Length: 223
Image 1: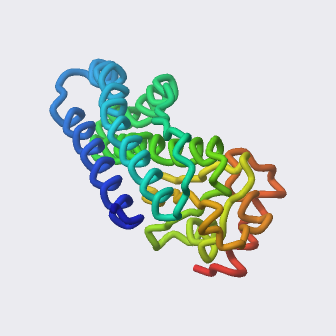
Image 2 (image 1 turned 120 degrees about the vertical axis):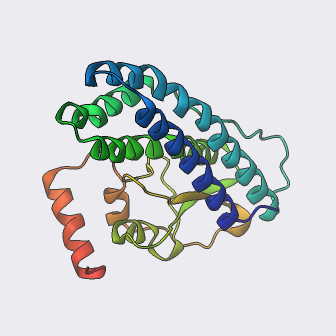
């Protein structure tokens, strides 16, 4: 059976291949910055879409194996692939990434493009876990599995506690390699993340909430 660490490693391979493909396209393009940007806008969403299928497939396999590992007996639930259409947002990211081409800074353009592609390729994995967890009667939530290094991610993972609220989103930064693990009734550890973790995971936060998260990080996870 695929373990959490093995699934995480497989996702990293998929996102790396996606980034290498997109950056390779950028490097191989010739012509004016405008022409190169247009080519990226046309091609990168397709690249991300292709690798997103693999990302979601990894999540489906992991979800189903975690279900079995937890001893869930209900076999009526069907795990679904979740690959949302993010073409518009990907194109916006590509437009931002290609801006440095106009100042002849291809290295920065490649770095930015890699950030966009990595984040978008990993997204279907996390979306698949969180969406199925919400729809599965046997699941009580999900926990964040970190790749280490980032104090923000360490804080969100917070000793393996569980996100139980269905509204909790998966906060991710560029080059974030964290994954989500479903938690079921049979293996529920009983510990829920605190209010600050729910606040920190929101996509939109007020200035006061952002300040509270920074203060919490500085107090409990000093640099």
